[in-house]
Each structure stands twice: as structure tokens, then as C-alpha cells.
Image (cartoon, rainbow, N blue to C red; front, side, top):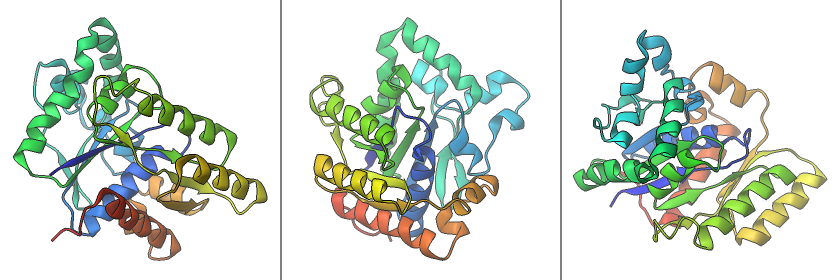
Length: 264
């Protein structure tokens, strides 16, 4: 069975895209079949994997056609995924910004991605699908959450991260999203961008008290993560030290919580 997870936070700068990228790459290294979908018009995830379709195509319609846009609108199908670092990627484009306007005009379209992915899941090609959405509580986030089985929250140990994570957890568990997606549930969060400070440790304890447990801690590494973005390489492929070990441990924890086994 294919498990679909949306990596989400309405707060920007919490390592959302980096978490989606690195966890997907780590699971692929462990032998799993992974589809990663960039649903954020900023396209930071796609660019951090070396795919920039806004540079690749001169025509905006061509760029849009290589995103989830046509499948959501019902005017086309999901594009052929790009093979990068052992996983499949459906990239994003700045043109995906226009999709939000369409969703506002016809709210029924917020289930468009869910319907498109039903066909992908039925084909049984992937073990995991991850969706990276933009930092918002708007229609694009709803689109991604209604298409998912699980929500993964990256939460840095600070007030901004804690507030965003707690709010989304409440919105999911108290029925805001479950009315349209009854099976949606919240995974234990990932604590990201963690400095070695007393305040950070206090927030980490608070996060654990609210969520019960976490999938792990990703430390603040000012050299590694900017380098991964600039070099368009996921951390598990770029680093062979503690940074990679943290991400691989996150993947193992994710597999344990979701009840999945290693791939072949």
C-alpha cells in the first residue's frame, strides 16, 4: 500500500522543504520507491534537487504543464516524473501560483490532487508519496492535506515553530480537515534547526509534551544545509558524517511509526 504524507507548516523557514527532500532521499537509499511532489510555487524543493523548470522552459504554459497544475484542474494528467537521486520528482514552478487563484474560484478543485494520486496509488508503483506544500493555511495547503494519509510537521524549537505545529495538529485532529479526509492523521513531528541552547532544550521538551514523541532531532548545521541547497544535493548524498546519520535515523523512525519495512 502506498502511504501519502504531506510535509507542512504555515510558518516559513522551518526546514519544511529540506525535510521533505532529505527524508525522501533517505528512504530511497533504503530501497523504497518514492515519489516526491513539489506543490510550492516557490519551487525551492525542486531547485534543491537540480530541477528548475522555469529555466528549462521559455514558455510559461510548458512550465505549468510539468507541474501538478493540469491534473488538479482536470485539464491534463500528472506529468512524467523526473528521476533524481533514486527517487521520482514532480517539480514545481512559479506558474503554480496561478493555481491558487483557480482553487479560490472553484473550491471543488481542492480534491483534484487527491483524485489524481488515487490512480498513482492504484498502480502500486510507489511505497511512499511525499508532498511539499507552500507555507500557508490557504487552498494550496488544503489541496495537499486532502490528498494525504499523514501530516508530517517540521518544528524548530522556538515559539514560531511550536505555535505553527500545535495549531496545525489541532486543525487536523479537531475535524477541520478530517471532514473531507477522515483518514488524515498527524505523525510525530521532526524537530529541526536545533541549536545547543537551554531555550531550545526547553522548547524540545514542550514539543514532546504536546505530541507525545518525535521522529528525531535535526541539528542546526549552518554549513551543511545551505551547501545542500547550493549544490542541489540531498544531505544523505552530500554528507557522510553526523548530518547523514541524523537523516537516516529520521527515515528509520518514520518507517517504524508508519509500520513499513525496508525496501528491496
